Amino acid sequence: MTRSGIPPRLRLTAINFDCADPEALAAFYQRATGLALHPASDGEFAGLAADDGLFIGFQRVDGHKAPSWPGGDVPQQAHLDFDVDDLDEAEALLLELGASKPDFQPGGDRWRVFLDPAGHPFCLSPARRPD
Image (cartoon, rainbow, N blue to C red; front, side, top):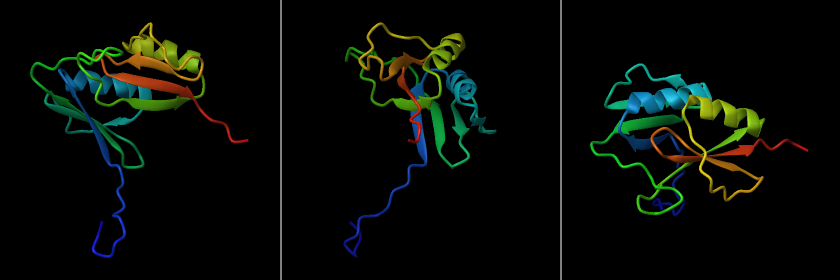
């Protein structure tokens, strides 16, 4: 709380993921989302920038262990959710780019879970259409 008693407004500006190869993981998400690669990206830290200011970063961690989703030996810690117009089309593209689709799919027909090349889970949901 601030001194005035009003909670501060927080605006999400970045999401960062640990991984073994930042440039490779940034390239995967760049091809999947079309976001621009930050020009200072390198083997230690790479990032993608959205037009609205959101930044997705990928930082190299020695000995990184991929999440073991859906098990909990190595927790997922965080995941991204994306809306898409066509689930089947998006799935085909992501698999071609190097994502994998685990057998366990808790969303049924409502959403699909994938793993990026570094093992981080992320979800695809059909875009909601205005009524």
